Every structure is written in structure tokens, then in C-alpha cells.
Image 1 (cartoon, helix red, strand yellow):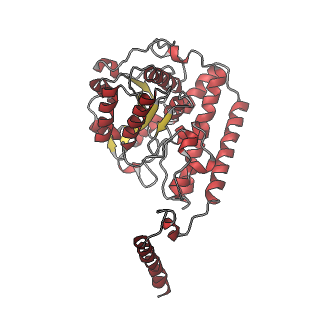
Image 2: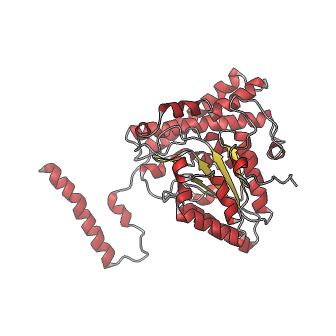
Image 3: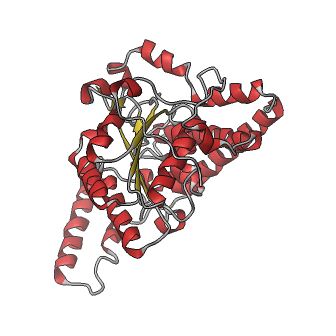
Length: 373
């Protein structure tokens, strides 16, 4: 049985600082609350976590490039949030089920996504981005905060079945202003559902800064619902992993929901349809570049003599291979004919569906007529 972490969302003073294990310069500090949960993590595991983050950043860069080249309709970048996503996702057990938002590329990577899984939805192809049952991850959710309700419902099912599982849901700071998130927390607390809420506070809900949405650190809201919470440095992968291990143990042991606020930063745009230069100061961006989660872990490993140039070269080569496979999968996708959208809607065809098909066919044909004219 691991030591119990003391929830730190009790006072404003506690929440002024995020819990961390690695400083931005890579130096390690003692953290009595979090250290016991990552006491087993050795240099080899840290190199593996670094590899994950580097690969994730390469996947993200490839996604942006594919969108800019017209191969994807949209992409939601996660640059800067690698430690939060990889650190928490690598702590989740295989039997647990995840309910993500649209930005959790690193979570689906950690759960075993295949090259085409990253792009299928953003390309607008048939079906979800991946097989939810195979990954243990629900389809990416575009509706802000809706996945939190889905997670609590699933957790209630776990509770009913007496299963050794936990539901985990990810959302951003902006989603905490949505009614769905607050309703989910009420249900979770009322029924002591085994669910972990992970708020990735990346400071911006599109163009709205978090300071406007929350006058008090977000983790401080959870205790008001009766949910213990912890606020961690989201660019510290060890702190993120420790917080998730605590939260999962809490939920899995029948003590009800737990809440993590990971304070991180979205380095890129909200999506590729966004221009952050219109609302974000360059000096702020530069200050967060100095807290880069990948550089932090690299510095820590270098100082410990546990990272060589050969390690980094091998990691970068592996990242390039993943990106190449992702691009090939994207370009190799065959889009179904437009009218195929009506196939398989009903077991038995009926006149209403045929009428709709005819109307849609006429609509598509009108573009050919305009072009020839």
C-alpha cells in the first residue's frame, strides 16, 4: 500500500505554488507528498518517458504540417503539454478507461494508438479516430467538457459491477466554466464514483486567459464538491505521474473521485484555425519556453550522467519514424464517396432515406453544373 498523499487544495496559501519534484533547470527537490509515489522510477524509466515526450512533440509537429498542407481539416496542437499528458497517461492501468478532450494526442499515444489513429478524425474520414475498445479510450470529444459526464457515468457502471477499474477524464481550464464539468463533479462526489478528473490548465481557453475565468486556483474548486485535489507543475513529468498514481489509488480503493490540476502552457495556437499572436504577449510565451518539459527532463538526466548524445539521437530517429508512418497513413487514406453516408444508417431501407439521398445527390450535382457553366 503506497503512502497517502495529503490533499493540498485546502487554503489559498497552499495553492499559490504548484507541487513539483523537478525544477525548471532539471534539479530534483524533495517533495514529501509526491516522492513516495515515484520512488520506483529509475533512470531507464525516465529515459523512456523522455522518449515518449519527444515522439509526442514530433507527432504534434507533423499534425500541424499535414493541416497546413491541406491534408487535415484541423489540428489541435499540444506542444508544451507533453509532461502532463505522458506523465499522467503512463500511470493509468490497462483496464482503466479514458475520456479525453480533442487535445489529448499524448494520451492516445501512450494507450497504443497506431499511425492513422492520430489523423483519421481530423481528416474527416469514416468512423472515430481509433477503436475505443482497443485503446481503452473514448472517442475524442469536441464538445467542451461533455466527456466529464461520460466518465462519471462509466465510473458509476464500474461501481455497479464491482470492477477493479477507474475512469479518467481530461479537460482544459476553459472547460471548468462549463456546466457539464460541474455537474459531473457533483454526481461523482455524491455517489463516490471511481473517477479521476485531470484539468490541464494551459492558461488559455482560446483567447480567454485563465485569470479571467478563475480568480482562485482551479484545484481549489474540487474540495467544495467534496473531492480531494492536488495542484502540480504540469511541466514536471515526475510530479504529474506521482499525482496520477495518488489519484488512481484513491479512486480505486473506494474513496471516491480525485482531482488533479496540472499547471502547464499551450505553446502553439488553440487549433490551427487560431492566431495566438492576436491575444498573447511574446514575452509570456518566451517565459514558458524556459520551462519546457522536455528540456527539463533532459537536463535532469544529463546532470545524473544518464543521458548521452547517442540516447538522444536514437530517440529523435524513433520520433521521425513515427511521424513518417503517420504521414503515410494519412496520405494513404481513401475517402468514401459522399453518398455512402447513407449506407448502413438503417437495417431496412425506407422512402424517407431514399428521398434524402436523392436530395443530397442533387445538391452535389449542382456544384458540377456551376463549374461547367
